[in-house]
Image (cartoon, rainbow, N blue to C red; front, side, top):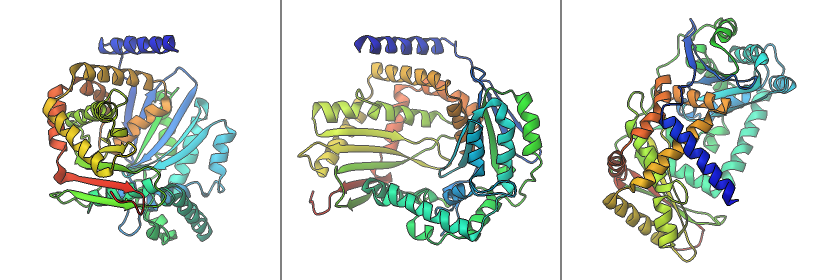
Length: 448
């Protein structure tokens, strides 16, 4: 086992060194725009005869009308119902019959649909996906059935999970006005009221080629993709009534906020802390890169600062973590978590976390630790190129959240250029308790 680990680490060193020496060429990505405003991205990888076909809509749960939380995710489910040409369930059945797989997902800033198939099945995927962009056919029976499905999904993933309920309360407290404070799946009482008109209104407004990005990654060429995209997507008219992507602005946060959730089902109490933080912005990603590396320094594995100080040195915690979600259209969060060891109260755990953060701000970063993190990030970027689905995801997520192709391709080098001073400046700015929410998740009936 030791020999295997050593060899693997050696491979990482070799790959990272090659990349830093300039031996890693940029990904072959081509873009063009159809006459109706649909952006097309082609990422070539000819090592295997497979392709991932994705359509990303620039609309997610943060674009929902007030009072209709969950409608974006609801519509994602409904798109697997029938169209003028396909019976309910026939879409996925056809993908499977052709040896492929398909799915969809919704986030705050996008909704995406994808199929992974043999490259010679690409035209069939475009034919079916473009069909459901405009020809979705829904009835009251579809609404009732699928509404029950998403409510059961919420029951399983949220209502039965104290940690998920806790996360919802943290988000709602962090964002007083912005839609990022509303759960993607929706509030239960609003999900109960979603109807056919809600779904169709959201569909007709947002599901249009000028609000979509087609990403094709794998064993394809731009010359082959263009005529297919023009044939199947280019014939769909743009939505001239597509609204500007405006969200309610979050007021300046000037006071720290606290949340305590007590639940009898809690097996492991813990402390969570979130801070408002800057997102990755097109052409100005350096601060986000510093925050990304700050999260790795503080919480990136067993050698991280929080782990060393809180788990190994003082042993007040059994788990610690630091997370930064840079990909967002609007202001995001930097999050910390500490799970106390047996016999340590939440108050003691929070105090220990605050002390360690203060010490970190005073002492700074270990240069060798930062160098190792950068090397590991570079190696992970190299390995990520082996997954055409992951490549498509990387570009789709970025483009729907305000970034450009150039931003995506420059990001690895921007990360490598971040200095210790950049990270510490970001840390001093983000760790402002006036812009924070501190939460305690604890067992009901237990005092702290």
